[in-house]
Amino acid sequence: MADKTAILSVGIDVGTSTTQVVFSKLQMDNAGGYFSVPRVAIVDKEVVYKSEVYMTPLKTDVLIDTDALRDIVAAEFRKAGYRPEDTDSGAVIITGESARKENSDAVLKSLSDFAGDFVVSAAGPDMESLIAGKGSGAWQYSMDHHCRVANLDIGGGTTNVVLFEDGETLARGCLDIGGRLICMNPQGIITKVSPAAAVMAQAAGVSVSVGDRCDELKLTAVTRQMAAALNAYLGVGTKDIDAILRQIKTPGSSDFPVPEKVQAVFFSGGVADLIYHESADTWAYGDIGVLLGRAIRESRLFTDFQKMEPGETIRATVVGAGTYTTTISGSTITYSDDIFPLKNIPVIKLDEELQEACFAGETEPVIRRIQWVLGQNDEEHFILAMPGKRNPGYMEMKRAAASIRQIMDRVQPPGEPILLVIESDIAKAMGQMIRQQPDLKRQVVAIDSIHVEDGEYVDMGKPMMNGMVIPVVVKTLIFG
Image (cartoon, rainbow, N blue to C red; front, side):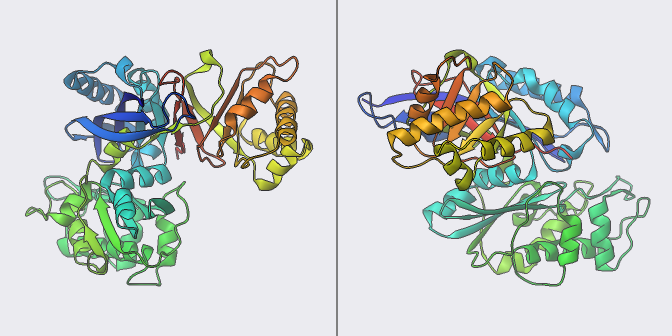
């Protein structure tokens, strides 16, 4: 009989313009049953509560009001009928320009007591691109229709872009294009012009400065330049604005190669509502969001592709954070019971060549690589990741286990746990062989079926379903 259970996941998104909270139930199912190798997966995701959309509270242009933000989150937990300790998984995401505020780290710490035993704190444009694309429905659409789909998540400060094909992520990137890069007061006086907006204004040949009275023609020229940049990003329209794209690339985002054969485009984020449904009041939000939505709707970006209206627009990121950040490991795992939860553990991944050295019993190349990485960030604990092998022989596994033990003894202080992430299903055997090493005084965690890369971080929750699986979040932490 299949073994089923549900976990409660929370998503908290602190964006440039808005803050939201969502609660979801994630249903897990062991299709393998009790007498075979477990095959556990998250089989259903249901959003059970959505907060209202709040304006992100700010003290100044560079400081988030942490006390006001805590009050918002605490109130939404009460309205939803949950306590922090009820949550099993999820993510606190600081996105857009908010991730570059001076106190973004302090904001995460202020929200940490809402996190339960296993809610990750994460930010970074690449991660936001991915989870917004999943929250909007673009990822699912690419699988259902076997096609190449782009999702543009356009918020107040940034546009996160992700490209999916058949459920695979082909590219992620982010530009400083958003609806609140130029703001004005109720009297129609410009109060904010971001550096990226200044770049756009110069490219459009207009002058826009703080203290100026709003000029719709000038600001339309700026937003049309923004739309042209997004067009070029997806390979349509103007091709000669590479220099501009470099200037407005969001710090920490990946390079986004010009894509080919994009068949459908989704728009999410706050500006998406203004793309699909135009506001009659140009200055309704005290910014250029309405003009930006209009400029995109009139551009080739809106006409050259099959355009899809997502199930979630402004809530795409927070829904993605609550429902798509958690994955499950695995079919074969080894762990020490009292070590969880583990949070924000950096990844050092071995490439195929270094993995071969490890399986051959050659430890020095791996040690040099790890020591170099640790020397860059002063970390003492880390996850050693590798692709793994299909059906390795017993002696290969034995040599690799001995190598890993020797490597960790050289690069880690005594008592630090050995943490392994292996993509292929050999984690249990590898973990058990390491634990059999003589005089080992370290805890061992070895999990499988999780893909990670160098520079990413991993959270692991407490084992679930009678210890068969571990909930895992893979993330990138970037604060500018």
